[in-house]
Image 1 (tube, rainbow, N blue to C red):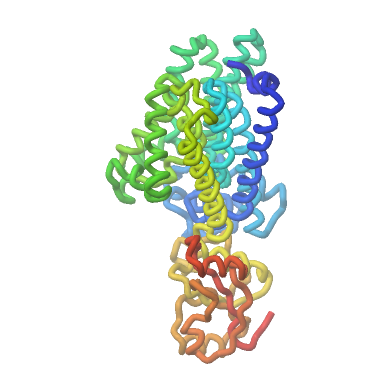
Image 2 (image 1 turned 30 degrees about the vertical axis):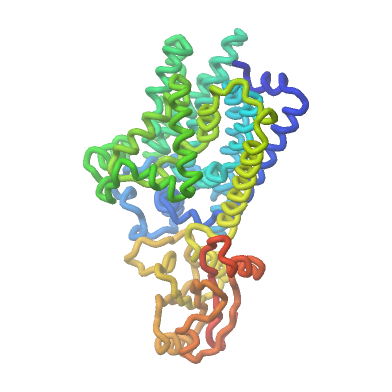
Length: 516
């Protein structure tokens, strides 16, 4: 195996051009996702990371903190990263602050794909598969989506991949007798593994397979494995110091996380699902054809390359999560980058495969599948751009323009985050500092009373399948003006065709006569 740089130099001009095209495609995918996926911050990365940082900065309410805060079972490495970034940049707009976090993880994730691509291509001897792998790596939208999340799963995905790449690079340098660089990359591998582990403890399930590959297959000397261990210990000790600074006492958050969730059964208290949940979920999310094709190619890829470092690392990780009771699709996010590798591994046995020599019907089917794949990518990107995971974030983001103005806010959305009652775990990070009053799903009489008595401008937000005022607003008889809609007219036109299943449009109305 060659180092990524040596492999790049050995490629023909046409291959380099193709790889650069894939690099641009990957960059575009990461940029789009980083810019538009702000709604995804209502997942665990908000409550266990961003809100932790916001609390340490003196802004968040203790009642709004997740249970991990009181139990001190959350490592604080990522919250401290967020704290430093917020302080250094001196930013006050929460949406811009969250964007910076997404941008950082997207850059780290995008950068990790470059050495992974140049290393992974060397396991495929077929020229067509050598093109399929970087193309899938660049265009599978789930990869950019995971990279745009400042979450434990996102960091686990990125730094575990970095760690394996550093380990493989050290292997290539060992062949060239570059001892000094070998030790450096081994240390970087250990540090990356530790960051992944601290952020997502379940990443430890990948380490036995990595050790088996390094010691028994790569024949890595024990003293070099010790270097990896020393680097890991250094990062874990640093994490312990950060926990001490955050919680105010010495605490082993890694052990508490493991004990509470796996020994005491806290994780399973959130619900158990059957063994085949992930298979069903993949088929549900990707559709029957893509779902089964994905599952079969992954399984075949694992079988064809049982001693590959990625197989040894991720198969135990996947099997554990299938058997463990509490399941969420995000638990598999650390695996997403290796999906293209195992897809091409599934076809690795076809060493002399030549697309041009296939029958005409097969070639047509291949081109149709490529077109269908590109169309699916476009649908995903459209959904990411115009339908964030929590669509009410459109309203929050628009209302944040009035952050320095006292407002009365009325929500017709089913859930009232971040403007919920004070005894409810909501989102201090996104709350307006000058928010005076808030109302949740009033009837027409109550809405009229709010508009008549409020001393401050009244803003109402809701969701709808088309741009029509809600019935409660019409029945109230109060004057109103549509100030904001989350989707542009051309998207609403496409939405009316029912071709793309976009989420409802978010609308913000100014209600009554008072204005800013």
